[in-house]
Figure (cartoon, rainbow, N blue to C red):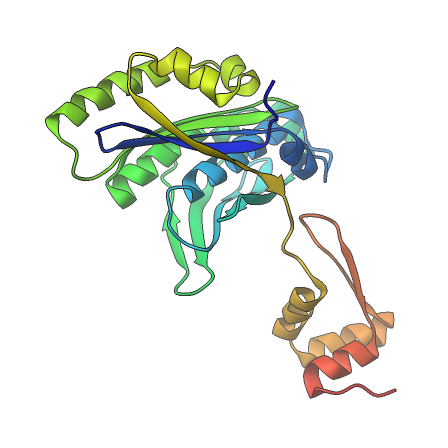
Length: 284
Protein backbone atom coordinates (compact mmCIF):
# COMPACT_ATOMS: atom_id res chain seq x y z
CA UNK A 1 0.00 0.00 0.00
CA UNK A 2 1.30 3.47 -0.81
CA UNK A 3 2.53 5.51 2.13
CA UNK A 4 0.01 7.92 3.56
CA UNK A 5 0.38 11.64 4.33
CA UNK A 6 0.36 12.53 0.67
CA UNK A 7 -1.16 15.17 -1.56
CA UNK A 8 -1.71 14.90 -5.30
CA UNK A 9 -3.10 17.19 -7.99
CA UNK A 10 -4.87 15.98 -11.13
CA UNK A 11 -6.58 17.52 -14.13
CA UNK A 12 -9.15 16.39 -16.64
CA UNK A 13 -7.39 16.68 -19.99
CA UNK A 14 -8.59 19.27 -22.52
CA UNK A 15 -10.81 20.99 -19.96
CA UNK A 16 -10.81 23.73 -17.34
CA UNK A 17 -11.52 21.25 -14.55
CA UNK A 18 -8.93 20.36 -11.94
CA UNK A 19 -8.81 18.31 -8.79
CA UNK A 20 -6.74 17.39 -5.76
CA UNK A 21 -6.58 14.50 -3.31
CA UNK A 22 -5.02 14.26 0.13
CA UNK A 23 -4.70 11.61 2.79
CA UNK A 24 -3.29 12.21 6.28
CA UNK A 25 -2.24 9.65 8.86
CA UNK A 26 0.91 10.38 10.88
CA UNK A 27 0.54 14.14 10.49
CA UNK A 28 -3.10 13.92 11.57
CA UNK A 29 -2.08 11.96 14.67
CA UNK A 30 0.73 14.42 15.39
CA UNK A 31 -1.81 17.26 15.46
CA UNK A 32 -4.68 15.53 17.27
CA UNK A 33 -2.53 13.79 19.89
CA UNK A 34 -1.55 17.22 21.28
CA UNK A 35 -4.74 17.20 23.40
CA UNK A 36 -7.37 14.68 24.60
CA UNK A 37 -9.85 15.51 21.87
CA UNK A 38 -13.29 13.87 21.94
CA UNK A 39 -13.90 11.83 18.80
CA UNK A 40 -16.33 14.37 17.32
CA UNK A 41 -13.89 17.26 17.80
CA UNK A 42 -10.97 15.17 16.52
CA UNK A 43 -12.89 14.33 13.34
CA UNK A 44 -13.91 17.92 12.64
CA UNK A 45 -10.31 19.02 13.21
CA UNK A 46 -9.24 16.29 10.77
CA UNK A 47 -11.69 17.51 8.14
CA UNK A 48 -10.40 21.05 8.67
CA UNK A 49 -6.77 19.97 8.22
CA UNK A 50 -7.68 18.19 4.98
CA UNK A 51 -9.59 21.25 3.80
CA UNK A 52 -6.61 23.52 4.54
CA UNK A 53 -4.33 21.34 2.41
CA UNK A 54 -6.78 21.16 -0.48
CA UNK A 55 -7.60 24.88 -0.41
CA UNK A 56 -3.97 25.99 -0.14
CA UNK A 57 -3.23 23.94 -3.26
CA UNK A 58 -5.51 26.23 -5.28
CA UNK A 59 -3.28 29.24 -4.56
CA UNK A 60 -0.03 30.27 -6.21
CA UNK A 61 1.89 31.78 -3.34
CA UNK A 62 4.42 31.20 -0.60
CA UNK A 63 2.88 31.48 2.82
CA UNK A 64 0.05 29.88 4.77
CA UNK A 65 -3.68 29.34 4.48
CA UNK A 66 -5.64 28.85 7.67
CA UNK A 67 -9.24 27.91 8.38
CA UNK A 68 -10.45 29.38 11.67
CA UNK A 69 -13.73 29.23 13.55
CA UNK A 70 -14.87 30.81 16.80
CA UNK A 71 -18.01 29.33 18.28
CA UNK A 72 -20.40 29.73 21.20
CA UNK A 73 -21.09 26.01 21.40
CA UNK A 74 -19.02 23.33 23.14
CA UNK A 75 -16.31 23.81 20.49
CA UNK A 76 -15.03 27.33 21.11
CA UNK A 77 -12.05 27.49 18.74
CA UNK A 78 -11.03 25.53 15.66
CA UNK A 79 -7.96 26.24 13.57
CA UNK A 80 -6.20 24.34 10.79
CA UNK A 81 -3.28 25.71 8.82
CA UNK A 82 -1.30 24.58 5.79
CA UNK A 83 1.78 26.16 4.26
CA UNK A 84 2.68 26.23 0.56
CA UNK A 85 5.07 23.31 1.16
CA UNK A 86 2.37 21.15 2.82
CA UNK A 87 3.35 21.67 6.43
CA UNK A 88 0.24 21.47 8.60
CA UNK A 89 -0.74 22.29 12.16
CA UNK A 90 -4.02 22.78 13.99
CA UNK A 91 -5.85 22.90 17.29
CA UNK A 92 -9.28 22.98 18.86
CA UNK A 93 -10.50 24.29 22.21
CA UNK A 94 -13.60 22.71 23.63
CA UNK A 95 -15.77 22.31 26.72
CA UNK A 96 -16.50 18.89 28.16
CA UNK A 97 -20.05 18.68 26.67
CA UNK A 98 -18.40 18.47 23.23
CA UNK A 99 -18.03 14.74 23.82
CA UNK A 100 -21.78 14.35 23.34
CA UNK A 101 -22.11 16.53 20.25
CA UNK A 102 -21.38 15.91 16.58
CA UNK A 103 -21.83 17.93 13.43
CA UNK A 104 -20.57 21.40 12.66
CA UNK A 105 -23.54 23.38 13.99
CA UNK A 106 -23.97 21.36 17.18
CA UNK A 107 -20.28 21.73 18.02
CA UNK A 108 -19.76 25.39 17.09
CA UNK A 109 -23.23 26.78 17.73
CA UNK A 110 -23.43 30.42 16.71
CA UNK A 111 -20.08 31.63 15.53
CA UNK A 112 -17.84 32.90 12.80
CA UNK A 113 -15.68 30.99 10.35
CA UNK A 114 -13.03 32.53 8.13
CA UNK A 115 -10.20 31.69 5.77
CA UNK A 116 -6.99 33.67 6.23
CA UNK A 117 -4.25 33.75 3.61
CA UNK A 118 -0.90 35.05 4.83
CA UNK A 119 1.66 35.31 2.01
CA UNK A 120 5.38 35.55 2.78
CA UNK A 121 5.28 38.86 0.94
CA UNK A 122 2.30 41.08 0.35
CA UNK A 123 -1.01 41.74 2.01
CA UNK A 124 -2.84 39.36 4.31
CA UNK A 125 -6.34 38.41 3.15
CA UNK A 126 -9.31 37.16 5.13
CA UNK A 127 -12.64 35.95 3.78
CA UNK A 128 -15.74 34.94 5.74
CA UNK A 129 -17.06 31.41 5.24
CA UNK A 130 -20.89 31.18 5.16
CA UNK A 131 -22.35 28.98 7.90
CA UNK A 132 -25.57 27.87 6.22
CA UNK A 133 -24.93 24.11 6.30
CA UNK A 134 -24.21 21.51 8.98
CA UNK A 135 -21.30 20.21 6.93
CA UNK A 136 -17.88 21.83 6.65
CA UNK A 137 -17.44 20.76 3.02
CA UNK A 138 -20.70 22.42 1.94
CA UNK A 139 -19.85 25.64 3.80
CA UNK A 140 -16.51 25.80 1.98
CA UNK A 141 -18.18 25.11 -1.37
CA UNK A 142 -20.36 28.15 -0.68
CA UNK A 143 -17.25 30.19 0.12
CA UNK A 144 -15.64 29.39 -3.23
CA UNK A 145 -18.85 30.10 -5.13
CA UNK A 146 -19.50 33.45 -3.44
CA UNK A 147 -15.97 34.75 -2.90
CA UNK A 148 -14.14 33.33 -5.89
CA UNK A 149 -17.03 32.57 -8.28
CA UNK A 150 -15.47 29.13 -8.79
CA UNK A 151 -17.71 26.04 -8.80
CA UNK A 152 -16.19 23.63 -6.28
CA UNK A 153 -16.99 20.21 -4.85
CA UNK A 154 -15.33 19.09 -1.62
CA UNK A 155 -15.45 15.71 0.09
CA UNK A 156 -13.91 15.59 3.58
CA UNK A 157 -13.72 12.60 5.89
CA UNK A 158 -11.92 11.74 9.12
CA UNK A 159 -12.03 8.98 11.70
CA UNK A 160 -9.84 8.47 14.76
CA UNK A 161 -6.78 7.36 12.74
CA UNK A 162 -6.93 9.00 9.32
CA UNK A 163 -8.28 12.04 7.47
CA UNK A 164 -8.71 12.39 3.72
CA UNK A 165 -10.39 14.50 1.09
CA UNK A 166 -11.08 15.20 -2.55
CA UNK A 167 -11.53 18.56 -4.31
CA UNK A 168 -12.89 19.33 -7.77
CA UNK A 169 -12.97 22.81 -9.31
CA UNK A 170 -14.28 24.23 -12.55
CA UNK A 171 -12.09 27.16 -13.51
CA UNK A 172 -13.20 30.33 -15.32
CA UNK A 173 -13.28 30.13 -19.11
CA UNK A 174 -14.92 26.72 -19.30
CA UNK A 175 -16.83 25.66 -22.41
CA UNK A 176 -20.16 23.89 -22.94
CA UNK A 177 -18.23 20.64 -23.09
CA UNK A 178 -16.69 21.51 -19.73
CA UNK A 179 -20.16 22.13 -18.30
CA UNK A 180 -21.22 18.62 -19.31
CA UNK A 181 -17.98 17.15 -17.98
CA UNK A 182 -18.41 19.05 -14.71
CA UNK A 183 -21.89 17.67 -14.17
CA UNK A 184 -20.66 14.16 -14.91
CA UNK A 185 -17.54 14.19 -12.71
CA UNK A 186 -19.38 15.95 -9.88
CA UNK A 187 -21.97 13.19 -9.81
CA UNK A 188 -19.27 10.52 -9.97
CA UNK A 189 -17.26 12.14 -7.17
CA UNK A 190 -20.37 12.25 -4.98
CA UNK A 191 -20.40 8.44 -4.95
CA UNK A 192 -17.07 8.24 -3.10
CA UNK A 193 -17.35 6.76 0.38
CA UNK A 194 -15.51 7.63 3.57
CA UNK A 195 -13.97 4.15 3.62
CA UNK A 196 -12.59 4.56 0.10
CA UNK A 197 -11.02 7.96 0.75
CA UNK A 198 -9.61 6.93 4.12
CA UNK A 199 -8.09 3.61 3.02
CA UNK A 200 -7.30 3.63 -0.72
CA UNK A 201 -4.45 5.32 -2.59
CA UNK A 202 -5.19 8.11 -5.05
CA UNK A 203 -4.71 6.10 -8.24
CA UNK A 204 -7.18 3.46 -7.11
CA UNK A 205 -9.79 6.03 -6.06
CA UNK A 206 -9.46 8.16 -9.18
CA UNK A 207 -9.62 5.10 -11.43
CA UNK A 208 -12.76 3.88 -9.66
CA UNK A 209 -14.43 7.26 -9.97
CA UNK A 210 -13.24 8.55 -13.34
CA UNK A 211 -12.01 5.56 -15.36
CA UNK A 212 -14.04 6.69 -18.38
CA UNK A 213 -12.45 10.17 -18.31
CA UNK A 214 -9.00 11.28 -19.42
CA UNK A 215 -7.28 12.18 -16.16
CA UNK A 216 -3.67 13.28 -15.74
CA UNK A 217 -2.09 12.82 -12.32
CA UNK A 218 0.84 14.90 -11.13
CA UNK A 219 3.52 13.76 -8.72
CA UNK A 220 2.54 13.29 -5.09
CA UNK A 221 3.83 15.68 -2.44
CA UNK A 222 4.44 14.64 1.18
CA UNK A 223 2.42 16.29 3.93
CA UNK A 224 3.82 16.62 7.45
CA UNK A 225 3.04 18.17 10.80
CA UNK A 226 5.32 21.09 11.52
CA UNK A 227 5.02 24.01 13.89
CA UNK A 228 6.41 27.40 12.93
CA UNK A 229 6.92 28.49 16.52
CA UNK A 230 10.40 29.51 17.63
CA UNK A 231 12.11 31.33 20.47
CA UNK A 232 12.40 34.41 18.24
CA UNK A 233 8.70 34.42 17.36
CA UNK A 234 7.76 33.97 20.98
CA UNK A 235 9.92 36.96 21.90
CA UNK A 236 8.07 38.88 19.19
CA UNK A 237 4.80 38.02 20.90
CA UNK A 238 6.21 39.29 24.19
CA UNK A 239 7.28 42.50 22.51
CA UNK A 240 3.72 43.02 21.30
CA UNK A 241 2.29 42.86 24.85
CA UNK A 242 4.63 45.66 25.87
CA UNK A 243 7.58 46.45 28.07
CA UNK A 244 5.60 47.31 31.23
CA UNK A 245 3.57 44.09 31.14
CA UNK A 246 6.69 41.96 30.61
CA UNK A 247 8.52 43.53 33.54
CA UNK A 248 5.43 43.18 35.73
CA UNK A 249 5.40 39.44 35.01
CA UNK A 250 9.12 39.24 35.78
CA UNK A 251 8.57 40.96 39.14
CA UNK A 252 5.78 38.57 40.05
CA UNK A 253 7.19 35.30 38.71
CA UNK A 254 10.94 35.77 38.27
CA UNK A 255 10.78 34.64 34.64
CA UNK A 256 8.31 34.50 31.76
CA UNK A 257 7.25 31.05 30.58
CA UNK A 258 5.22 30.39 27.43
CA UNK A 259 4.02 27.18 25.79
CA UNK A 260 3.15 26.85 22.11
CA UNK A 261 -0.53 26.02 21.69
CA UNK A 262 0.17 23.86 18.63
CA UNK A 263 3.15 21.70 19.63
CA UNK A 264 3.56 22.44 23.37
CA UNK A 265 7.14 23.60 22.94
CA UNK A 266 8.19 25.38 26.16
CA UNK A 267 9.99 28.72 26.17
CA UNK A 268 11.39 30.49 29.23
CA UNK A 269 12.77 34.02 29.33
CA UNK A 270 14.73 35.67 32.14
CA UNK A 271 15.39 39.33 32.90
CA UNK A 272 18.43 39.42 30.61
CA UNK A 273 16.27 38.20 27.72
CA UNK A 274 13.68 40.93 28.36
CA UNK A 275 16.33 43.62 28.84
CA UNK A 276 17.83 42.65 25.49
CA UNK A 277 14.40 42.59 23.84
CA UNK A 278 13.50 46.16 24.84
CA UNK A 279 16.89 47.89 25.07
CA UNK A 280 19.02 45.95 22.59
CA UNK A 281 21.48 44.84 25.25
CA UNK A 282 21.42 42.72 28.40
CA UNK A 283 23.04 43.23 31.77
CA UNK A 284 25.36 40.50 33.02
